[in-house]
Length: 333
Image (cartoon, rainbow, N blue to C red; front, side, top):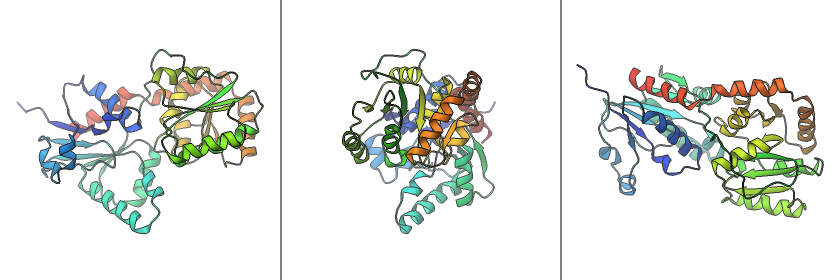
């Protein structure tokens, strides 16, 4: 009788539950815990992270899964199959120097060369990687992320006083949220914007200053980190969802808003058209007047049929389906 395969998964990011990678690990773990394969989870201690030969401290496994492209861990044994998941190449777009870009590409190629298989969270990311790296006949697979909104909602601390539009994400330059300030100025005064997400970056502080300077502090609110139940409340009550991001490997908030049938107004960049599909509306540029026109026309055209098609499309993004795909891939390796 064959011995069961031993699977080890890098779940270090599960320590950060408010990040996209933390959510990715947490939701897969929920389903992996029920699997007869009984995978083990690699959550290195501080000592292990600092150790120069960290791979020597890893438990033996037949398959090791690096759950994101920045994972520094490799299996020590050459016999261990190495699965690499690439979420995006956003870091490459943010590196300013040619030397930095070359270093990033070299390190990523090293991981791809070592991998027995590579998975991607969108077709867009797969195409980006195929254009830049030598995949040399590797097994490649796109496995979409899932949606995990709670069943119930909770009234948040900040309650809008009129019609509002919702957006969520870490408030960083790549999210392009600042364009919503000028956009809001051109909308009827009854509209407010709620933007949720961590605000540690200087970009967020500059947005808050701009909102005050434009006299929009009673219409545009950065509410910081919120609970999952509060997030659902905002999705349920919002008139529409806005997401002008410039760099996305997937765009989980888009899928979440879609699952509740919200009108979607998105950037047409990177993976967002793939996730949003034909029933979302897209900003072709970020001039405030153009964005306003897209929004006004989209709200006029939005229908029950579009809403139902969006909800149906959201079923593509399912954590149970994703977990089963990864477990099947472990076995095939």
